[in-house]
Length: 321
Image (cartoon, rainbow, N blue to C red; front, side, top):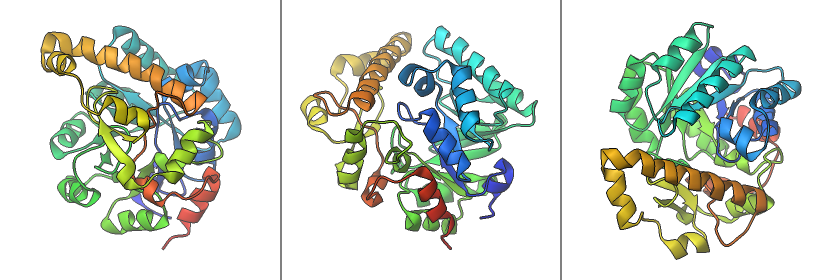
């Protein structure tokens, strides 16, 4: 399948296995790449959830596949310790041969300068045109277009509306959100996207190390079971509706909303939310069904019917016309 994404990344199938906290274990990343798509490392998943030293985790991926892989770089400035660690991880990834980076939640200029100096490529998450243009001004070469059907931090626009809004920027556009089967994939390519990024579909795979309860929840869910909650990070996140989500509600409390609105307290509140979310989601993905479940997923659950290998999914998608 020949698209601008396959040509730029030197892959065979225009599919990105999106970086997912907490679900991106090394075996899943490697399997996606080995099958002709491209897997993307989520550093906190690799280290905090699955317990790998970062370099050792990257080497594990390289021991499974010799094909290209990518890395996700979250640029949010909530902790100096995190920022320092992320810079170290980027250095290691480049040393280990990674040449594709997906940035989000901040200014990508520093990453772009570093990656381009070694011949690499940077794409940036975008939910609307103003953020897309800022990212392009700072050196990114393509956009991951996060729509309102995505898991995790979803956008507000439909896949179609977001494509129309960004298509005049004349850069590679990748659809992120809502792709669960070959028909969804084909529709996005026909619309004009040069590829898709899938997360939820790859959770329900044999290589994903998430607990079977999580995978089965995806199989059982319909798109009407996907809700947005502010209780994880302070901004809306797409999750599967569970008894726990119903019990605590989906809106941040009044104190949290107040603290998130003020410059001096916003960063501290975001840090508190992020640390809490890291723990809660790690527990859910490792231990399975409990009284406090947060299972991120997008509306692509509607078309996910079985647990398959990543290679089987990518092979089947690659045969669509």
